[in-house]
Length: 257
Image (cartoon, rainbow, N blue to C red; front, side):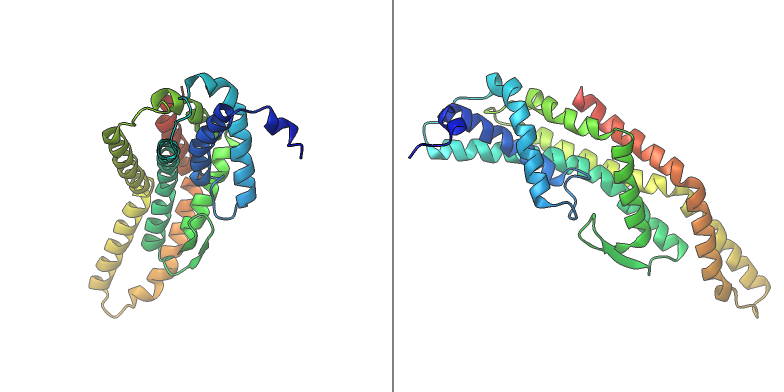
């Protein structure tokens, strides 16, 4: 039987090169912000990974190692490439987690912690404020063009971590620790005004409770806390997104150059 004309023209080295590129890029796109969300179709992610791998095949063909002579070496190369791609994708995902942390802190401080719904970006239940901030962050990444830094990091990764060369494990661990710590720190920094508001608000309630013991201060505490939290969020949401995008760009601009 005649085969597929396109496949008949490809040799084992070309097929191996495509699989090697697809292993890294596919692992990246599976967890990239926006593309790797749970509500995005798996067929779309797979098609995008195949398309990007095909585009990168020409520029990267000269940097790839030769086809291993045994199956064990082939499996090892593919596994290492998938781990490198997964590490870069998780690093981007950790920065987006800062908005999740910020949303949970805001919900606890403003009395909205009981407003729980299904968070499609995290694949679990979460505070509604957290879902709103994470979704808004994903939208801002694509609206402002920050996604170009993510795709620029794909090409840059082949200069930093060459295929066929053992990746620096110590650098990987340092990368993960740095992104985890920076994401939680950014989440706390974004909620600093809400933490100050909560401290002042409940301190004032304590003073009122001491001055007028018969007055039921906590009866009006929850409505006032929610109203103040919503008002402050309306004022600061633009600044919070700008700070997040600046940190996002700083983290990936040097990597993508």
